[in-house]
Image (cartoon, rainbow, N blue to C red):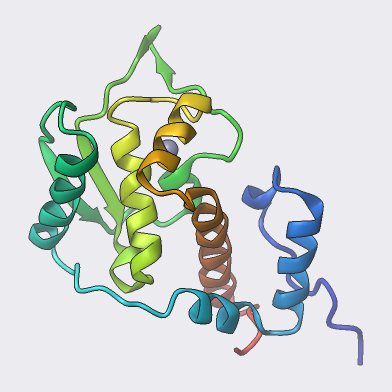
Length: 178
Ligand SMILES: [Zn+2]
């Protein structure tokens, strides 16, 4: 009866991206094509399903890109990390200053939902967390490091936000059927 356009607006954590990019994503969402487009862009799955496998996956990349970073006390999937905000922060710089000191992270926790995510998006979130070992804040130096490890980091982070938006919409029953 009514127009389906913008029936499911993209979540706020996509704000900050260029309007054209968001309009494009919104159009795909409105036409029920966003999931298919992401699946086509990232067809490869992965076999990292356990904490042990994740530990190996993370440390292999740490050895390759960040040999001098401090050792990790813990690498684990975390089922409590559900929201994108927890996994990524926001696209603009977020202060992580706590008690006047930058909090150094020595743990890498990856939301359990990444067990089922495309390989390219798992890689992106691992690169994100590895970069935090050196750069606590989401600033220019942080993103430069991410892009050094993964040249198409920005594209993948945007697509991850879309992927998580789809999961959220599916969870709320509002997602269009792909
Ligand atoms: Zn972050």
